[in-house]
Length: 478
Image 1 (cartoon, rainbow, N blue to C red):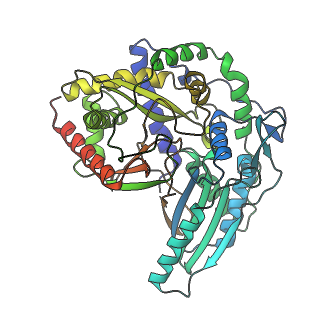
Image 2: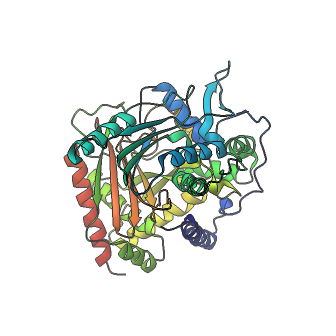
Image 3: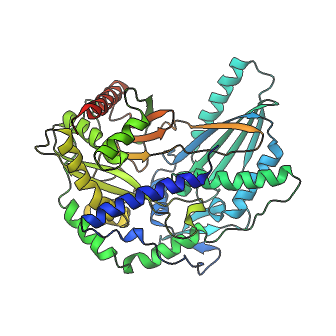
């Protein structure tokens, strides 16, 4: 399997491309120059929450029964798998990453903090399904996954990781990994997978894996972020940009919502998955080269065109997640380094795809350049948002992953993974969440939607529209 290094190299190339375009446009991208190494925090057991943690914590406090922050990975393992060694390897990962043995509390003034426990082995449920028929076994696996994802985390009483080891036969297993969003972003799986493989290999060789905690730890980052963000050279400029850009905010899109959809929906949701037809990953990359931009911008242009058509709006605002792991040592950490960013596009009068791409590029570049300003205090200042309901500024969130994300690569085992549907809307809470995975085999799209706001047929129609928009882009004059 592919190691994490090529993915990091690809991400670096994309950052360099964007940095060059920003420089050419006269826009300073402060985040392209990371600060010095993050220092150790003042208290080894306690630290403030990062902004990403704070948002997830507030939401869970307001809705303790919610599973919107539950991420469930179902790993299918074929080959010789030592479950005892795997359990010990996971425990070693928890030793190395303090955020996996952390609970969350509020002081007497209501201010949240995280408490790092010296030890907190991950709970592992082991179930042998070998006596069942193949059909019964699959039904039981499906039921166990649904049961696991439906159980919310109590962040004050337990760690953010739970495991189930399901044995089918000597050479076939399912591993159910449930993790809370408070410690998760798109690179968390890579960080877990690398340390898990290292520990598992040593255990198979009869050696003791290294459980020494890494440095920096996520709590170090959280304290550093809270202590320094207001005094960074870019903060005042970022703040001024967002006040100008979001005052007033774009009007809510008149999307094809259900009749009588509530103004304050719950977080019940569903997911519609599709591999796009008619557009391959190589075609998307070729389109990006032809328009001298990134595949993400090309995709955003197509999606924004769909929303423009369906809502009759020309002021289109979309959300995305920027992951800041550029500071030394953060690339290998388990933790949530993501920050919601508002991308706002003026599509009035855009008649052809070339103009559409330019308009989207014009909105994307400055938004990306100012991605370092934390979303939660900005939303609180401008709208009074407290982190507990639908986020302001946009109705749809787009996450674009431009390469395969490998799961654990263990010796003697072929392992694949997929993310289970949690039955909840996407967090940060939006009516319509779109995740795009550009894999070598094809472009996979996952639409996660509020069932209070949309029905499945409407979402399928939006997917049809998106496929058509991408096909039109492929044939547009360049």
